[in-house]
Length: 327
Length: 263
Image (cartoon, helix red, strand yellow):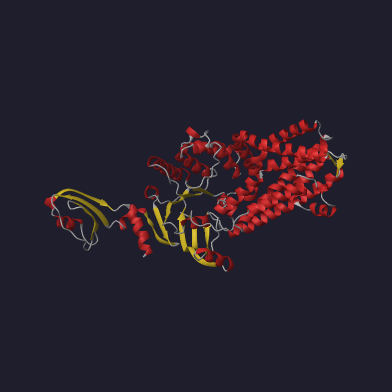
């Protein structure tokens, strides 16, 4: 398969004005402004294949948005080069616009006083589509994203979930090859979230759209993406398949036990006590160091009333990777 | 071009929801005219029927037209929108769309004021007729020229205000500049025609934006002449061209400075 996004060692450096404390500091900064150099993205390289759904995640301030902004032509990289759908975003921003779609969960693109149908007509015209093409496309999107029920209701009267569906539809009107989704499920309830995920998947399958997703919602990442790229401090710290991520980082098991008697256990190599309420214990086990069987033996099997062994949640795995990178 | 007409059309459609909001603006407009009608009647109470080349009726029509252009324009809203777009980084979401931001805002604003323009114009003509009882002499051709001149005045005003709004790329607050601009237009063209100023000052006034966005179209409406038409339309076309170029230049330079963090 061919690569649709190729990022070759891009960096983005911001010059941020710094001000000392108080009034005197403010006055000083007028006369002699001081600047701090911030490397938002640092020598980042990445390739994405056509048709992939990739999760691009990282803690706040890691450089995700800056990277997306460079890939969509909003910002120019300080160093390096990116090629998106065969186009250099820094040089041919307008040409690229026809090949990509963007949805920012926190930013409305639709005209709130118009109905979704009028909005789609508007966006179609913006992307130079002919009237019959727009109508055909609206029908397709209507079928895939199930918009029929509210296609003629002004956007301001839609629920957040319906609005996001329309946002996604509007960004797909010109059949983009890549869709950048920036936190598409933010603020949605679990049922609507699940709906949106199903629709995103369907869209990827039916239209072959490559999806570049950023989200803080682990559910989005786990359910949608086969590949995860984690960035921190402007660098890629992990680029792996979802399966590998889970497999490699699943050394940790969580054991919750209810005992007949009080047990005295202390932290030792491979065992971390998360909660100790006498009869109830919650432990985290590093199976590379201590097997589950060893731990159960330590607990004395006769005295166990109930036991629950589970995997470390993906959320913890990811936050451990974030923290690990900070050290 | 089709996409810009669509932007215009969508804004008109979206604005149809607010037609009743115009009532407040119409009352304000009426009060302005009312005050000036009495002010000018007082001014013309002496022996002279003509002051600085204008009769009382001409002066009233003059202020009806200049105030009409100013009220329809909605400059403060436009200036605020652009500087807010720049400050919030909202402008970045327009950068990766296949249209020019300048064109987008221009046609969006035209769509914003289109309905208002039609309603206010009819309202203004009715007020004028009620106060004065007659319209200035016009042929169909001359009235078309006046309308063209009014539209050009609108276009130039929008571009000039966009330039002021785009100052937000360089300074924290572009409002003081808008304030200054609005006062120049108000004092040096809207309330009084330039013939009311000393001859030396008149030479300067002919080069100020107030000449093309207020004085010009109103002058053509109250005393139409071929000679004035040529002078005013040429000045308007030059102003339109230069203000468009400046607008594009400031935008292009400003966008390079754009730093969008986080989000």
